[in-house]
Length: 416
Image 1 (cartoon, helix red, strand yellow):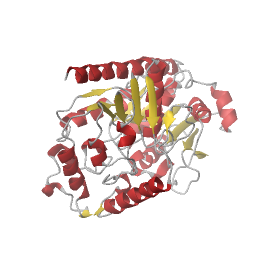
Image 2: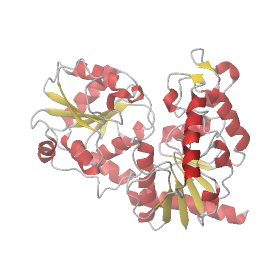
Image 3: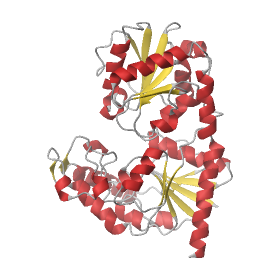
Image 4: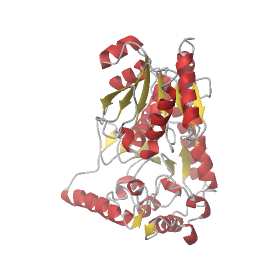
């Protein structure tokens, strides 16, 4: 069976990393899987880059500029998280002309594939969702009014969103063009339920298959050795936070973490906050304890050391699907504390491998951090975290689930 994954990239952001890991898991169980991308890092013979020429490069640049311009016609709080996708840098024949039996779409924003281009894929399609864009308008995450449920009625446009209702326009375009349902895969149960309640994809086939992790590569290292190598304090508790851009993305909830840590400060003053994904402290103030910045980590070894050095990893996100960081920390035996939102309950077993705080309650988040820090005294939680990763996120398990899905699709296609 030959599978062609289509993703904007195979590195960098969380969606790209997750897509590449899915590909690797499938190859682990014997599937002939390759990936077509716009940008590549370490292709290793399994990444296909479209032929480079001046026309294609110009088309790619223009599609990104045009989509960005259309997105700005609608003024809203998260313009950077909107992709109208009216223009496509990739010609659809680059997909249809391959010998692949299955096309597995991932994150295809950035001007890679338009709504129209997606509708013209002739092969059986599986779409692994990494956010809410596929069943929403142009937004990748909900703006707060859940218009994807009622079909983007004209009277549901938020008053504070000025200008053209781009979200509604894009949604109607999808509804018009996407006549044949795709098979949808969601990494989290939360996203599956969102798909089922959406007006656009409510009747489409959907199932949850978590994102995998290579448990041979992601494992716990000695805590003291990890701290020494990273230059972290030998004594005291280390609380870890990490995200692309660090504290800059409000969706990642760093302000809520700061609030929680200030509530924690009185009961446990001896801790250090370690932040990766950010170089400086420009946006961070008001915390009396030590803050250490690891910057943007580009290699898995350093990231593995960071998880191993930490006593707890905190994900205070306001919105999240199934963050790779949570799975990585769990695989390294580090408990995760997060708000009980999105797909966090798929990663964290409450009061077993971590703590799920009431949504956006900084007091409860602080309580969860204190709980996790207290568990290390018993020496059991690290093993429970590792067992969770082995049972739910290992390559063989996830690869086999995708293989069974593909086999069902091919059988159905051959009978029609």
